[in-house]
Image (cartoon, rainbow, N blue to C red; front, side, top):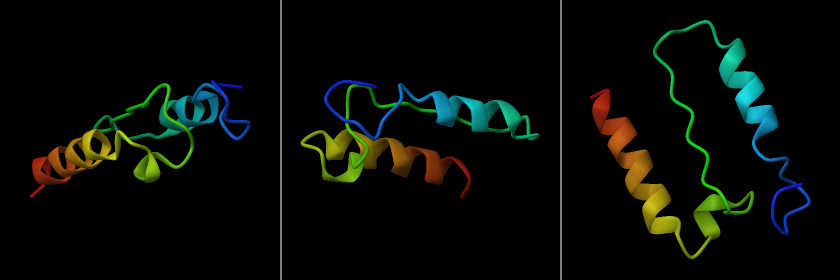
Length: 59
């Protein structure tokens, strides 16, 4: 369990999925210590900026 969020397991499932994806073009970004609702955290602007950068990379 990560931090105070019982729904998070230190990104273990995200890491496992990342490793199983066959593509070489992949990105894993963990926002520790944010909780499972990363778009509702006080740091949401950082999350949104990172998402926007990632999306713009593939325009």
